[in-house]
Image (cartoon, rainbow, N blue to C red; front, side, top):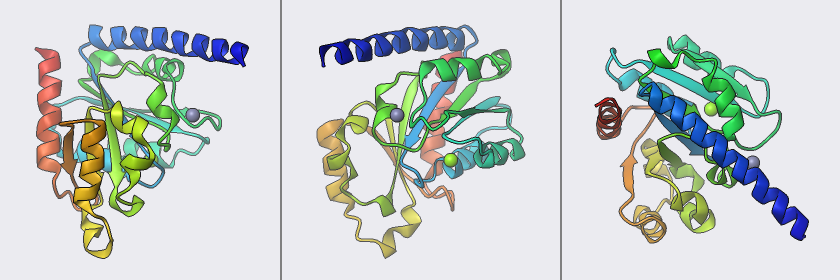
Length: 221
Ligand code: MG
Ligand code: ZN
């Protein structure tokens, strides 16, 4: 058991080092990077596409798409939206790590990017444990997943900078208690920046986009 603990620690230490290298490369090129996490089906790709659509045209974007299999469905959608996208196939692994992201970053022209959106693998457990070198961690929680998610997956809620509550358009059809959900979040991450949106209709995106644009311009100042 002790040996296993030491191996895990070594893996996490080297991931941390690689994450710092990624951050250095991003900062040298004034790229603001966000890590978008969620469970499968929460609407990560739709959220990213709606975000791309709403950002000013002169903002230069790049996208890294994490997938567990060599399917390019999500990457193709992003490319079709006119964005430079790099796909990472994790080969079945349930999270992105700093090494994978470093390899993807090297395929992008960082000098030509202001904002890098990283779509993590759909999973609420281990992505929270692997630093990638990005500047902000975003979690998308969608209303059909239920209002008990913060209580069941506390770790991921503790480490995020922004929470997106997606699929607000479905609220009339669900037993989703927004107060109960928000109370659970508040205990884990007091004062967390939260935006309730529908990536499908675009509802609620104005405030999220304003936050993001401000962060990108602060990063360039
Ligand atoms: Mg996706
Ligand atoms: Zn994993």
